[in-house]
Image 1 (cartoon, rainbow, N blue to C red):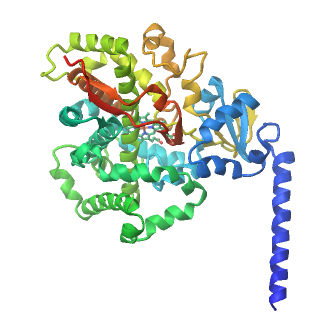
Image 2 (image 1 turned 60 degrees about the vertical axis):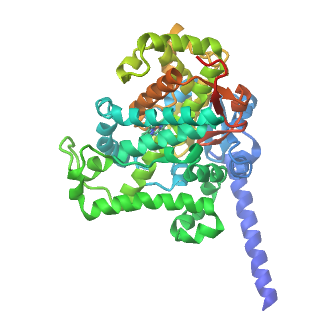
Image 3 (image 1 turned 90 degrees about the vertical axis):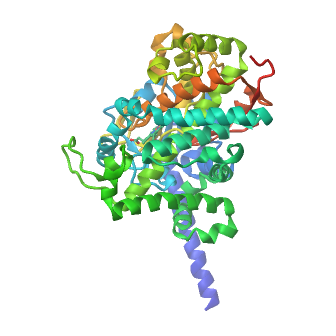
Length: 502
Ligand code: HEM
């Protein structure tokens, strides 16, 4: 009996080995992508990508740069996946009328499938974008400018107070600030991350600790399901940092449940939140006015907070570091700010700041160098196939091109690693190649809010505080792990009071 079980297992193993071999031969010799070159192991299995993503924890992007040097402007990075590196390819993939759709395998990793970011079905995405767009319109941002300003003021005061004693972690400071802004903007409620001593809010510490394992979730999706299904308390002792993160998710659930129990409370609020747009009937919509499900409302709340916090904070970290690190840039920017805003005790409006050409150039350069989302945003080619950079790409192929390949293109941006705001002033045609918010039907929905935050944060922090980078150099930002957002390998950016105080 035991022998026959072993025999059955051996046969099963043989069948599996034969099947795997046939699959490998098919992928290398007969696949419709066989004309596109790449490393044999990447062409024939998913192990290659798994190694860089999950084992090396976010090193696929740096390896892609090497692959393009070796294989040219298009590389086969998986049995069914291509990565491009040419400007034409970027605009072919992320164009307005593109037939490509978001790759479900990439986006499932977030665990918020039924949200503006998570929807892979273009119709579902379109409907959600229709509901949310007015909330992120320029008009809406101007109406809620005071919300952003109040959080910026709070962070400036705290930076002043903390740096009087010792250097502070600037990246954490900006993350607390942007988390508080997006929370208040979306829900008209306070998260109060800024209240955490030295900006080390437990939720941010938890994310920082867990984030390296992020890509494991892509390869073992059951893990995400398990983590989200098991009661939080189980993790209290097993993984206290994960517990903090999961506990924070409960805040979203409670918020949604309270509203669904009694939607009339929405009328008590003195200003609109995302739930006003999602739950109350929208007169401007022609299509269906169906209220999203409970799970979709929770997903949306989580997605918006995640989309709107680290991206803005990273841009501030990179930009403010470089401004303070270069006396010439710093002086030029301060001269412009002082001229437009002579009395720093008064408040400066967003509309005033938007007119400042050097500040605008500094922010553009910060967006270019930080890129926001560094992971190549993969898309699946529709049933008609696609022409990308002159190549015919068959239906079902996963295609992508990382925005970093546009932002570091030497022909467009000479000396691409240099922080050089003047380039934007000297050459207006560069604007077309600034793509931190992506392009096409799935481009960033929060772009206006992001710009507003960046103007107000850069201007207020740099105008009101006399700070200097502490124990941080440009080298600290040279390499990073690609975990959707960049996680830099170097020392964390700290800010100290400047020795040459005013
Ligand atoms: C500097 C700041 C920001 C950068 C660089 C940035 C970048 C991006 C990028 C590259 C995408 C496309 C992602 C993809 O294709 O999967 C995206 C999508 C999105 N962003 Fe932003 N973002 C920023 C700030 C914000 C803010 C403040 C919000 C406000 C909540 C926001 C909300 C969204 C949403 C909802 C989407 C999904 C759009 C869709 O898939 O249809 N983003 N963002």
